Image (cartoon, rainbow, N blue to C red; front, side, top):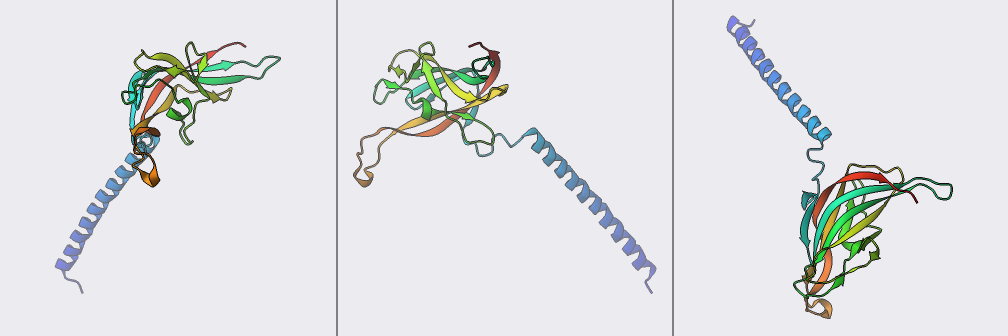
Length: 210
């Protein structure tokens, strides 16, 4: 038969266990609530796997042998007519300048290699083209030392596409040699591409006729 002291000790122990159990349940509940809040607000989602800075347009950054300014973005829709289907495109305004201090050479902006449209859940998308000089010339040659040229990068989108923010990834070539690998020249040159930044651009919507 248990003594009165044993009964009292058991009651005290049971209360202590219940008190600590309550604290642990409260702590676990708070952690779960915090995790749910972070998940639905995207607290860690945007920067998951992103190793470069995310900037807001308008902004200008140095990217290898070019200085790249990103100014605006517009979705341009063309309504359906009796002779053509509805269509749309995304245009991103650029300011491009040749700053090649290594070779001082004029060169075409590598439109399909140095820009990407960053779309959540998809592989980055290359532009259909980049036009300069009043949006007319594809593959425009940027002359070293001259002021920046106004250009536009065009991406293909569906006629119903809509967004209020576009993310554009900017890549840059590196000026380096092949280090004599397999007999290759050790003279450095512009090569390869790596991401340097992602630029967030507020995006507007407009309509045009054929």
